[in-house]
Length: 356
Image 1 (cartoon, one colour):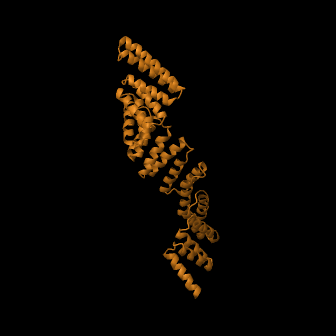
Image 2: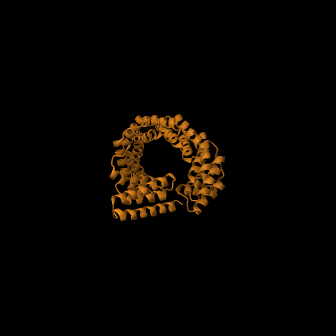
């Protein structure tokens, strides 16, 4: 429907252009003026209706009549952004800037389009130009902080985010981006404070809690780290990264029974032969060989070529004096061409003992 309307308007403009041509010549200023405004207004109407493709066509027609109008280029960039056609949007914003280089929003939106394209250096330049035009608006600082984070310019991120916080301390992203940059620089005490500010503003996203927990780990504030991993799991109970980090931390702290429970829950979410072997090892250390055996069996089932699984299973069976079962496991490892040197040694040792 919108396309039909656009075609109708186009016909009317051409008819009007023909009348103007008869009166004033084919390239008269009046004909160009009328053609531009007809298409520009149609682009506005179509944008209001969210008919982005037709709006883009209308603005392009308008620009054919007059390339020196800022707003038609700018609004073309807007509708192309709605269509996520970022390269074309960036071109339109650049044309708008060429016409009028001191409009804040064209630089800001150019920065956003370039960010979507992953052109971080150019995006940073656009955001800096927006800040130069109006340093009191927070949005370009947010965009610049993100671009500098991608460029790994950690000190630049910190400076930019601090400026953003001065303008609007209630924004989440400056605190969070600053915390991430401080973590990269191993300034853990400062990063903890920045993460805490971010979480105070937005406490329903799991990543800041995970990042804060890790910062507490680096500061050896173990219980704080555990508490924040647990808070992260309350937000996303099925987040495997969070559960694995907590499980590894508990194991590092030699809290083996808690670690065994954490690994058990993790394996329910993410079946992994390696993680299952770790669980088996922990169970063995706490005297639960009866539970370690099915864990090792499960690891071999998940990955029949994981030599460590056969090795751990066989040695556990030996500890329980189930030497015949252990011998079968070692032979199975050799048959599957996954027996390592230790497995071969254990196999030969068992054979020697059985002969004796």
